[in-house]
Image (cartoon, rainbow, N blue to C red):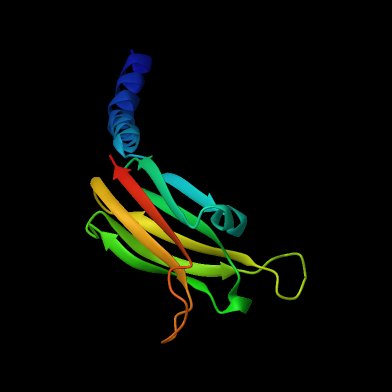
Length: 149
């Protein structure tokens, strides 16, 4: 009789913990995992084709990383010229990674990160230009078409 009473008491005390544990794992499984899509284009690819169009599909929420060949020693750099539907995608960061070859004047990579903030179709337009007045504009261009689902 004491064993049944103790078992019942322990069951009643542990039941809320079991229910809480089950609901937490259920909620965690309903939370979508952020997705990541990467676009990589080298300077050699741009030399062969100056204007590029890329199409990607991504699940919301997510991140789009655009890696573009660049050589800052030439005075050229990438810039975002337009984001169509900024309510769907927004620029989070940009950085220049120098070449690891150790050669003076070697090119590197500009890394742009964009966050997906909603579902829908968005477009990122970018240009490789010399940013000063009178500098060469649109030497290379890239358009990234994003379908966020």
